[in-house]
Image 1 (cartoon, rainbow, N blue to C red):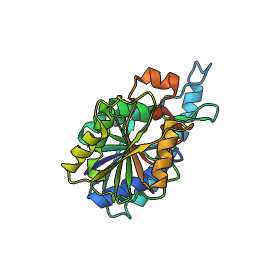
Image 2: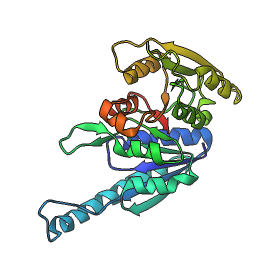
Image 3: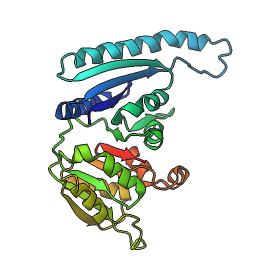
Image 4: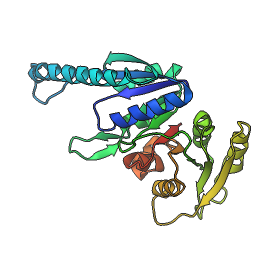
Length: 272
């Protein structure tokens, strides 16, 4: 991976994804594009004359400038190639616009709801579906990204899992071990459009050896089962197809992607 698009925002996961971007950039000699987008449109109920917006804009602008100064000072001490892009407007829009000439987008996993509850990131989900490149979702507790750590690929035989696998090849090639993991379902004996042997065969053409593993389904959610399997094998990342069912079905039924983004325990590399 030679071109990393890094979302810059004032959320609690910013430090973690910056560190992951730096670790990948050093390992692959990649360039980091830092994209900061700030929306100055503030809506307050009853603010017919825009007084709340006028009062908030200086604070929003100051916070954005302070964040930029802090991170640029950090980046100037790092041995990586980088640039800074600033836009007015929604971050998701500009990340999508700029993604076409990058290899991966790094974002955080969650949005903060108005009531303080943590919700799966709508931006991460939308980017995974709409962007022409993979999305790497980095949770806030991550301190480093070891490119040589084992990687677990969540395999359900779908086209989405194939796309995620293909997009992750540059990182999988550096991993000490790659596991193609399927969660067994009693009713899913013939569910694979692409069996895991096809995925392993594809990786072998890139000189990547993968171990196929079948994980028994227990009472836990599929996402939790995958995270447990990855942690047991000391994996540094999970690769998965995003929203294998329709997006509406995922939202209504609480699919694997939604659950994974709600409480990610490892960086998640997603593609759709």
